Image (cartoon, rainbow, N blue to C red; front, side, top):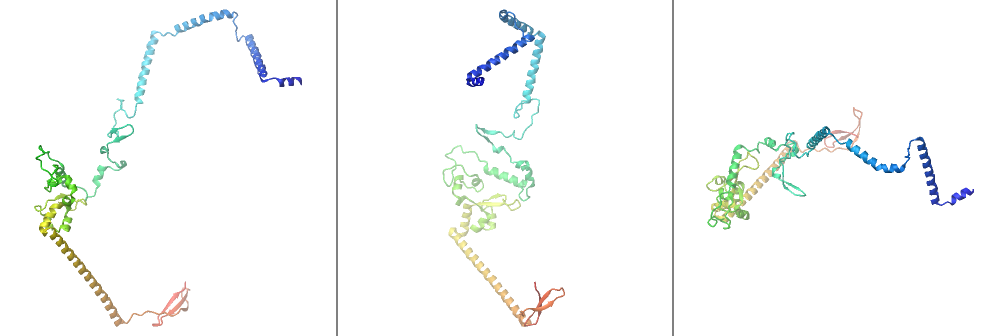
Length: 368
């Protein structure tokens, strides 16, 4: 009882000291047992062992150094192995090169689809490509060159049309040499400033007009089709077909290649010829009014003709009806009496009978 009370009164530090003493005693006992068995040998003269320790370590290091010094043959073998390792490393680096580079001469150069597309402008954050060098392959399913062979025959161009188109393009858009003396160069008839003329107006319609004036004055220099010339200025086909009277620009019909070629006329020339034909702008207006009145008269006459035909048709139907009534009498309309029980028919279905009060016609009805 006294021992238990004493153990409870011990402090924590005293408990740790007791544990350490027990561990030291156990370690000393185990060490003594190992020495008795001969597993651990203790030197008889520790001082001498301590004095001779540095000398022994230096001797061992010298012996190890002499034993590991390579001979001439070993040096050659080491050099050969080193060269083989470096060659192997170079081959591995060549095999593991970047896929975008062609540094390995042993592999043949294979062209890739994107080799022809090069960025025109390279920046830090984006790459701008030149889209003029790109072609739309429609995902690889449709070839634009092969698609031209399957076009409709109406839209396909013939060789003559293509040659004519190229000829017109060269004639219109190949500009001439500039004038040596700008002060004496011909100027625009409209603005009297510009010396660069519109090639279309200059070479086709023989008008000395610049592109700016053509754009700013569409009421004078816009192009008209043959149909517009007929409807607006009342010109005839022989007049429009005469090349001595009016200049024209022939182009393939945009609706179909089999249609007749489209002819374009400049408005100022058409107006000038129309004013001469009809006696000025007032004469053209009078001709338009006369044609409108004639068109309204024809429209009214056509309406009256249709009305007369409708009346005649109505009268004919009425006359035919009266003739039938006179010959066969009026058309009889049955007036049936109330339904009465008609018994059962051949199929065993219950029926009802009705009788016309005028002619006595009987009719059977099936009750559903």
